[in-house]
Length: 254
Image (cartoon, rainbow, N blue to C red):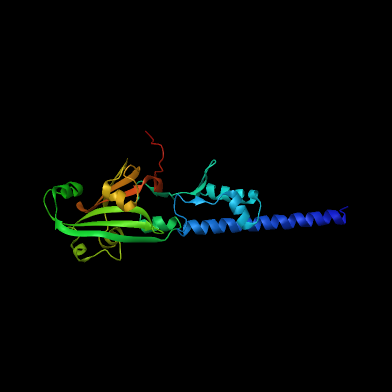
C-alpha cells in the first residue's frame, strides 16, 4: 500500500522528469536553430555544459544528454577538454548521379543561394578544347559561380559551355538561375563522365571558398554530351569536410 509520503515522492519525481524532458527538448531546439540558421557557423564553439546549465537552470546531465544527441546527429563535434563545436555538414551523393546543388544544400537544412562571379564569351582556347574534347575552336561561354548554404561557401563552380551545342546559352546571364539547372532544362544530356579527385584547391577556389590553400578538397569534374556532341565541362570544388560520395553495388556474377 502506497503511503501519502510515497505518493508525494512519485508525484515530485514525475514533475522533475517532465521538466528535464522539456528542457532537453528546448536545448536541442535552440542549438539546432542557431546552427541551421547559420548564426553559429562551422567551427563555432558551443557554450560549455556548465554555461548552458546556468542559462537553462538545469542539471549538467540534461545538457549532456542534449549535446550527445546533437553529436549523434552529426551537427556538433565533441572534443575532450576543448568543448563542443559546430560540424561542417556533409552532403551525400551517388557517384554516378548528377545532383542539383540547391537540393544538396537544402537537404542539409540550410538556405541556398548562388552568385555568378564571372561570365565571358570567347573562342575556345587549347585548354577549353581539352576540357570539352573538341577537335576545333568553337565559341565558348565560361562561367564561374559560388554556391552557398546559409551564407557559408559550399561549392565553387568553374564551367565552360560549348555554344555550338547550346547557342541559347549566349543570351543567358545566369544571374537568377545557375548554369546546371538551366542546361538540364534546355539541353537534356544523353551521356556523362565524372572524374573525382582529392586535392588541394587552386588559389581562386580557395579564395572564394574562404579556406586555406592547403585545405583538402573534393573535386568533381563532369563532362556531358548530347547525342555525342560535348555540351559542357564543369569543375566543382568542395571543401573536403563538406562532401562525401556514395556508391551502392552488388557482387558480379562472374
